[in-house]
Image 1 (cartoon, helix red, strand yellow):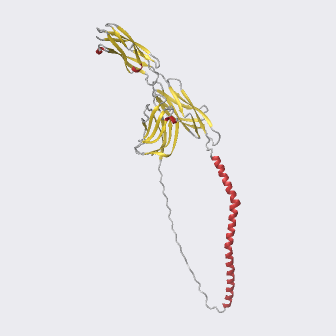
Image 2 (tube, one colour):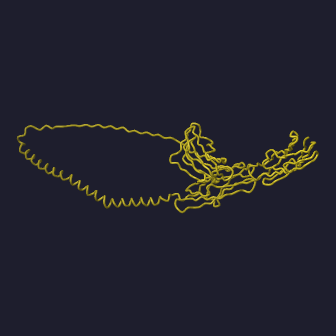
Image 3 (cartoon, rainbow, N blue to C red):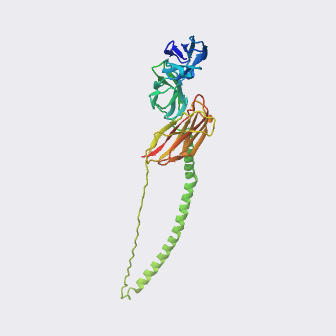
Length: 429
């Protein structure tokens, strides 16, 4: 009892989204009527089908089954050769079952998606965007990012201009834009620009954005200067019309009050002098003894001592980003955690001052920012695409404390949830 099999072809080629077939011959070499089941094992098992899946054969008879391979056009099926096996099992003689092996080569396809977040920004001297490069194809894709504007009035700095994006993943690349010329005052100026992703597997992908340039002087500055000038003019008018005449009148009154007793004393002194002169003339002849003069002295001291003190500390700026690839979960209390990589140097503290939360695909769920196990911020993913925080009191992370991002992915836009957070702050030298 037993079975023999043979494949029509052991080497096949199939395009994702299409199908190819292969016939397998099955011969009953046993001495009794037997039933044979046919299936596919190996990596191609999930997208392979056998018709018929089972057949009954008389002794010595031969049957044919058709194996159909139909890989989906998604990034889950990688491009390249995929080994498979066609297994034929005998119901009457399980020990006589056989497996015929072959290889199906899945061809590569390219599906590159490009997005700019946010599409429009406003700023006086610079602005920041984030380029989202998603590879929905089935093979790694080297990409070069190029930014430019038709009027050549902007300067661009791409964080990673050349990168390789793995299939089924997305890369987030920072983009900083500066205008060539700035202006102190005037209406806003709109600059359109384009980001292009160039790759060797097909035509380039491009996305457009807008930078709205504002005047350097804040809009409140001119009204404030006008109000200050009005106050200065009012103060000058008050000085010359009210305060200065009042000060002069008070000075004259004070001077008159001081001069009056002095003049009175001078007249009295004059009378005394005249009386003394007369007495001197009367006593001139009889005076025999001169008067003895007298003298006096005085002294004084003083001291003082100054003092001063200074205390300074130096920090250096730091910018980093944590991206996520959180699997979907039906439990809202289940979170997938992601940590800062690389972490701050050993023995150094870090202060976070600015946070930019990003949810470019509109995933649903919850995102948490934590210091170790302590939740510092919790936000629903449905509430934002881009959310910017400027912390009045910075978050301080002492040596050994980790900055953790936790994501509960409940309703992803496709596949997993991919929110990300960009951080700015300072770290000890």
